[in-house]
Length: 253
Ligand SMILES: [Zn+2]
Image 1 (cartoon, rainbow, N blue to C red):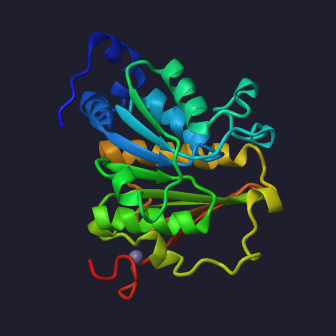
Image 2: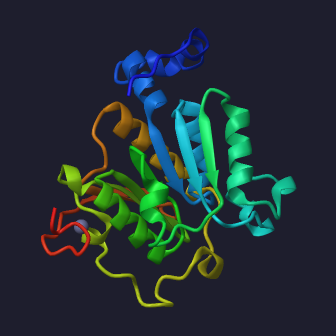
Image 3: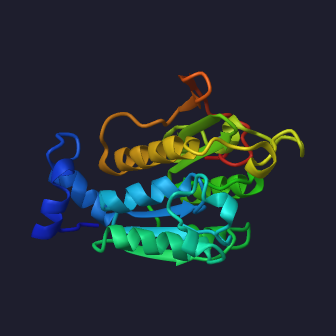
C-alpha cells in the first residue's frame, strides 16, 4: 500500500530519510506498515515506543494485563499513575503522546488459539514480547498460517534472545528452533526468577530495529539467526538456526 508523507512528517522523520538504507521510500513503507505487538510488558514497552517514534503507520497492541507496581522496574512505557489500568491503554496513551501521525489499536484481550488468527489478520509483521511459552507457540502457528514474519524475543534474568522467524521466505519458525516448551519449573517466569530492568530495554529496542529493517528492506535481518545477549558478562553471540522438515508448525510449507 502506498503512503505519502506530509511536509510535517518529512521534517519529523528527517534523520531516517537521510539514511541511505531508509530514505523517503523506506519512510513511506514504515507509514504504510501494519504491525501487531503481542505483550505491552518489558519487551513491548521499548519496541512499542520506538515503532511509534519511527512512524510505523498502524500499530496494534495486544495484552490483557493491568499495570502493576512491580512492572515499573522495567516496563518504561507505563507510569505510576497507570497502576491498575489496562496495559494496552497506558501504552497507547504514551504512543499517541509521542507521535500523533500514527494509528494505535489497543486490544485488551488475551491472545488464544481461538482468536489468534483474527487478532493478527491484516498485519504485515508481528512482534512477540509475551512471557508465556503457550502464547509464543500460538503466535508462531498463527504467523506461519498467515505467512507473516514474526520477530520473537525472550528474556531470563540476565540473558535475552531474539530472532526473525519467517518460514514463508525460507527462515525457520519459532517451533523449528524450540520444538517443545520446557517442563514446568525449568523455565521460571520473570516473577519467579527475576529480570534485570534494562535488559528488556536492550532486547525490545533490538526488536524495533529488526522491525524497521524488515519493513524497509535495509541490511540483513535476523532471519536464520538467533542472537543471544548475555548482559551479566557483556557478551553477544549469534547462532545459525535451521528449518526442521518435520516441524509441526511449518513442516508442510
Ligand atoms: Zn517450523
